[in-house]
Every structure is written in C-alpha cells, then in structure tokens.
Length: 297
Ligand code: NDP
Image (cartoon, rainbow, N blue to C red; front, top):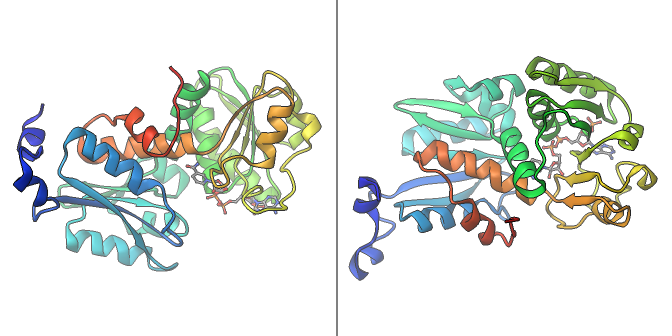
C-alpha cells in the first residue's frame, strides 16, 4: 500500500463518515448533456477499490463555456477533468500545453495538472486500441480496417490504428472530413500503417469494421453500411454504447462476426485518464463491473 493510500484508506467509522473531506481530491466530466454519463460510476468504483480519497462527479457545462470550465478548474483546484461533447475543441485551446495525441487531433478529452500547468490529453485512441486488445485479442499491426465516420471519435480511432501499423480505409459522408481524418492518420502512421479515403465497400476485405458515425443512436437510423458487406470472422465495433446493441451489431452477429459496442472504449479511455491523474494503474476489472461489462479472461 502506498503512503497516500495508507493515509487515505478509511481505518474506521469516523474517518469513513468524514469522506469526502477538505482533503478529498475532486475530478469530473464536463459536457452537455452529461447527466447520463457512465464516467462517475467508472472512476468512483476505481477510487473506492484502491482506497484513494478522490471523488468524481459530472458538471453540466453549456456549449461555448468549455474554456470557462478550464478556468474554474484552475481556481477550484480540480485535479482532473474528462471532457466530452461539445467541449473537446474549446478545451484544447484553453490548456497550457497539449500532448502529442491531443495536438494531432486538435481535441482534448482529458485535462491533467502538472504543478500549476494544465495539460490537455486525448485518450480516445489508446482507449479504443486497448479495448480491442482486451475484448477481441486484436492488435492493430497488420490489420486491414475500415472506419466509417471521420468526426472526433473517428479521427482518434483512425490515428491510433494507423500508429499501431494498421492499413485503414476511411469512409465518411462528407469527403472533406474524410480527407482531413486521413491526413491526420497518415501523419500518425507507424511501421506498416497507412490511411486512404474510400467507401464502405472496403468492408468486404476488412478484418475490422468500426462505426464511428452517430448512425444507430436514434431509433430508425439506417445502417452505416450494407449488411451484406459484413462477413464471418470479422470484428465489428460500434462506438455507440447507448443503445447497447445497435442494428449494425445485430446485422454483424447475423453475419457471423464478432461484435463489440462502445463501452469497452469508454472504459479503457477512462482507465488511461485515471492513471494520468492518480499515478496508479486503473483496476479495469472493477471499473468494467461498475458499468456491467464482462471482460474476457
Ligand atoms: P462527431 O459529431 O464529431 O462526428 C459524427 C460523425 O458521424 C461524422 O463522421 C458524421 O459525418 C457522421 N454522421 C452523422 N450523421 C450522419 C448521417 N446521417 N449519415 C452518415 N454519417 C453521419 O461525433 P463523435 O465523433 O464525437 O461521435 C461519433 C460517435 O462515436 C457517436 O455515436 C458517439 O456516441 C460515439 N463515441 C463513443 C465514444 C466511446 O468512448 N465509446 C467516445 C466518443 C464518441 P459528416 O462528417 O459527414 O458530418
């Protein structure tokens, strides 16, 4: 047990009743809407499990006030912020420094403290790749991947797959966004990694198909690609997690593919944030249980 944990682990009823106290460290997520976020459940389960005197909450911050929330973080001494829609771009501009991934993507999903400085990070791509490894035993190196969508989440996934050595095809409704995502992915590409703009027809030869569009969030949405393009043996990931099972995942299951929804990415991007803020490895099994996710093995 670390000194921090020994000091903070509640040793008796009185100390338990005093938490949170004036010493409790505060973290939270900003977004709009944010009330249904799973992030408080993920992080608070991890703090509790490790006996850390931290608490995590959700702050509803209206569009256009992301920079104000970063200023509030400075003044209030908030230790860590998760950032979700619609603030990822505004917060990037309000941080003192950006990590490589955040600068590449121009988007921040996590703010960390380094003394008096606020560092903007982006853990979405690492979260996706770690979830793919943990849930499907799949690594990017040598993969043939199709990513549908080129928004904030799509760009993070494309860059992380390319950095890990995957050949990625980007298909997106708006061609300009697809080109931008491909350029970002190309600049991130590691050995063997490459990114091209294409169409959903690339699903026919892909090992991995990722839906990073918002199609599937609302009842009645069309599929993001023709179901007949999906094949047995593929891994199909929908970044959407509400609903848990989208029509795409149902179609992929019917085709004999392995399917994952977006809870795994959410979990593993949160685990990266937890490690950056606290310096402790995240207890991912505990965090998974907190959101009803069963990890293989
Ligand atoms: P953005 O708004 O940045 O991007 C939306 C993407 O969806 C764009 O590529 C857009 O295409 C496409 N799109 C939207 N409507 C349509 C449509 N009618 N037909 C075809 N394409 C469409 O959103 P994000 O990238 O932040 O989020 C995308 C998805 O990923 C959401 O479902 C979100 O919930 C999920 N997500 C999951 C995370 C997780 O941890 N699991 C983390 C972040 C997001 P165009 O460029 O043409 O507008």
